[in-house]
Length: 454
Ligand code: PHE
Ligand code: NA
Figure 1 (cartoon, rainbow, N blue to C red):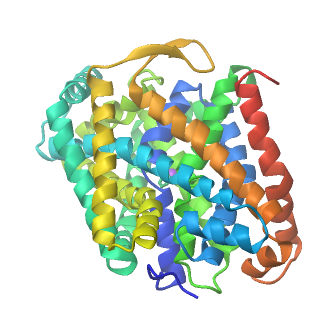
Figure 2 (figure 1 turned 90 degrees about the horizontal axis):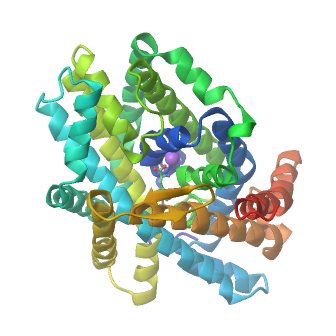
């Protein structure tokens, strides 16, 4: 059976598409700034543990549900639940995921818009030899300019709608094939530069010297949430990519590869950014503006910096693009199935809703903000933080919990074994055990300690 939406043409295409979805602003923009905000070392270690025992096992579970269901997440979950004699209400997990995808896409597109603005800035040469203060003030000027941001946000959303409406082969595959390898190459240039010119040792110590006394309860939830966010799991994106995966490919091997690639990109980006931060005595806890305040300094100094800087931000836009596609695809595929309308219209309507919601984020950085308490101390937050916490720290982990329970306890062991390739060797047993017991317990514990119960 294949999905009505089409199928990836090869194993490599699945890997590229799934990596394209995973590798995005989450790795290069979000990971460094949340690591900075949460004190480094212990946070990074907690994050890596979450990836291993929660994120990657759930990625396999998601791909499995999608490939067995061969429909949008909502309908795949429903069909598999009914088949297993379970409750149709499992499709709610698909709805929650679509909502999360829509919300994340709304602000993702705004940040991608910042990135687009930087492409133009750097290409024009106006950041040559910029100082740390200069870079900060340029960023500050950008975020208080709602009209300009709205324009970039609109452009990015149109780009996303465009690819999604062209479908799996003509749209998604074409986009990832060229962009992913280029992005890896650019990242290496950046890392080599940061290693030779930045404060690499201090960056390394910051990221890997774990002092667990610095790990607050809410930081642990942020680490867990980012494990979901960065792997694109918990909302059905990997499920829908799994629905387009040819039978016969190994779910385990491909998922682990995608997870490892994503992890490497995040760690490299973090090392590069913090090398620059420390070399220029900047603050690690800058928040969402971190890479926009640090990278221009590097590109401003590097020989050929305008060229490399332009290329880097351009590739970051592309990385965001291949992720935005995955954020919107669960909903688009569902609308196409449910309403029997074409992809183009489904993509346009979904995109418009996310676009409108994006305005909240634009305003949140420029004018609206208020104080509330999440876990730790009372801090000033914008509505952006509300959307970010609601999705990455709440909906994604809860969605992931449901997905693990679904594959571990609702689906029959036989169908799980069958979809995983028919053999239940030691590697299967290990994963199955983790998904049934370790993953759910870990997610629940992190939640309970974040709200202060344990
Ligand atoms: N994984 C993407 C990133 O790291 C974000 C994303 C989340 C994409 C969920 C799709 C689904 O940037
Ligand atoms: Na990622």
